[in-house]
Image 1 (cartoon, rainbow over the protein chains, first blue to last red):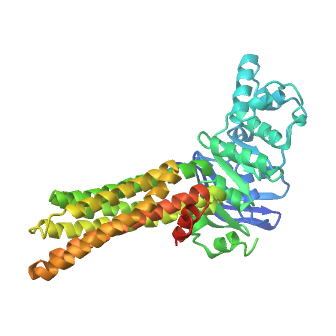
Image 2: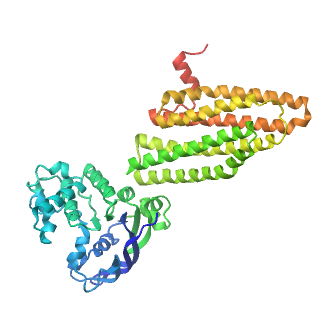
Length: 253
Length: 227
């Protein structure tokens, strides 16, 4: 099955001050699939995923060199509107970070800052987003209670619903399950598998078993270099690079 | 997710088993009806297909173990499917052997009527069919029944061997033809043996019990010790 590429990363280099994090990373992300970025701490996987919706811009002394094309558009071009960009490329973080507002307000937040006022339309999108995030049945009778009253796993799904509400094409997950218990983790993984039918998903994880379970493609990064990229089934059965083999078999990292 | 992968894997194995079952049936039908096309079909068209299934199922099983770390029944199923895959690959080779010998035989006069081969083939083919059914429906009773039939096929094979041996003694001009009939009988016997292997694997999947080398003990447990 040939997928079309939605994001092209070409010779990406990034620096915090003088310290180089990513080294000449070149990678094509196929559309409507799950791509996992894995590697030991400090390999640059989080930096790379944060480059994809320019989250690193907020960090002082951060510098990016290279090109990232999203649907052919250079993400680092001067005229790119970062707000528009982040609407199309949403993000879910390591720790669930719902706003201290109601469940409804959390999901509707992005719509409201976009200026949507039609209540009926908004109700519809909130419901649809919660359904897509597999949370609707659990919260439909308490939409106006605080999102902070939910469990960790539910809070993470609220954050996913919040990202979905603004109709993104790509969703970035940065270690989405590292603060969750195994059952909540299984739910998120199942959800990711479901979401890939309609969205392109990129997941950063240091949990190799999770990368194996949820992704179609896996990239292995080590010390800022992209060591290997390919179909997950292949990476986990016959990795081409000795370092991938050693990382997967627990020899380092 | 693992559930979907397992369903896909099982479907693939059933497709493969159905192909191999068809190969065995065709190889015998080609012999009995002197149909060269059927025999050529098994050798030239279907055997390469079987090899593709073999490769694909091997890869899928390996990937499932690597990616999903299956446990309990899922693990038993993946490991047994790996074995069944090997079983089916062997069985496809037997179909090819039978077809090759059949091609030799149909071009020449019969050494004697093929009634014994016909009934041996029927019994062995039914064992194969039932072993696949036992896998599809996880039917342990059917699987055990197939294992019990192994001896019948062995006896049929022995009889053909005896017949051919006496034929060779009597008529020296039929040696090669007799050897080919024996080869077919031997390959059918292997089909029956492998069908019982598949059934043992089914029982291991369903019950987690390994009955491979325990036939005598089991009989004892069921019927009491033999005197």
